Length: 206
Length: 247
Image (cartoon, rainbow over all chains, first blue to last red; front, side, top):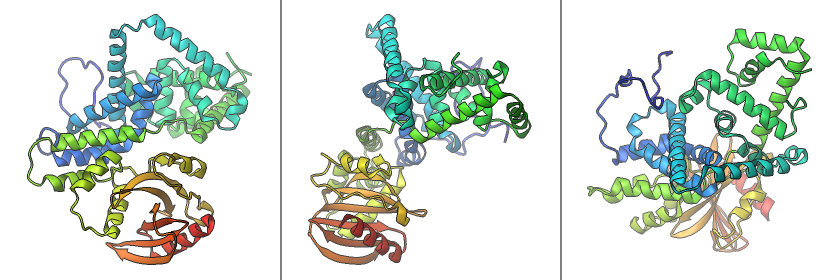
């Protein structure tokens, strides 16, 4: 089972990529039949919360997250035939991630300058730092914890959300993000270090 | 006192359960002999526990779920089809989305008994991971969630101490009216408790339909229907516990 072929590929595969080693049993018709809908419902819809949550942590905006998640789910529906049952969650996470990048490009096209975005990020970071008081966290204050996660720089935030909230394996995160395993691991370690520091959980702040 | 920089990834992988036995042993042995790494390992475990306990992941808003369901219905029924009504009905499995529910109930043949609608609502709730709109065992969260969604206040209690933990709540539609659905678990089984305004009082009565047990009663101006595949005795016990806790 080690040679398992994941149903999605890295962003730009070098040269023509062979189809999945195990070909689908029968040719799949274009989606929109009841069977596709049934498959979508049973395999993809259970991960709607995860899709929305990832979109929300990436975009850091509730409305944008809804749009991104909706776009991703519809995209997932249209390409449901590329999904194999055991990989539904990382498969969907990768689609959400792409939908987020589409959204961000669109934002950039809408003349929101990079500087403004950076400023917004700084602001979020400050807010989170102030609100993430030890006492709040000790009480399990979800809002403060969410703020502290949201304040992490993107690649670290993404790694942490995929691992600690969505419980993807290192390998799945590497597939979803297109980053080498070692990069995933160091991002995750950094993310946790930063988060622990923000939450006042780490003595040795470095 | 600081952790060894070259062990950071190893310690993270250890708490993530990503190490094979050999490497896990190595990491543990190192932490046992290095105070800095032992502290780092403890900090990592505390962080993971904090994240697990606080569960900071977001739940999708029910409106988003409803919109996606509506799109699904639209996409799968855009082409002319022979058994359109039957397909829509099949697709509606598990939706619980208000907008789509209204469509479904408009298309439904009238005259279905309330009992069979309840059983269908129960089956639907189990199908497509739409058991709950608000998934929490905290009754102080579930109860206010219904504010503005239904025009009555469903009594919400957690019966975990009695073996019927509260799982969450859901807005459902039964018999053309909005109903609050509270979701409880009994071991591996799910109990849906449907509530809407109705006869103020009524002794519990048990029915059985398509393998499900139903217990209905009335209290405080509300009608209650508990629906589940647990056996009748368990469901009646649930009814007594719930009525006692809310009475």
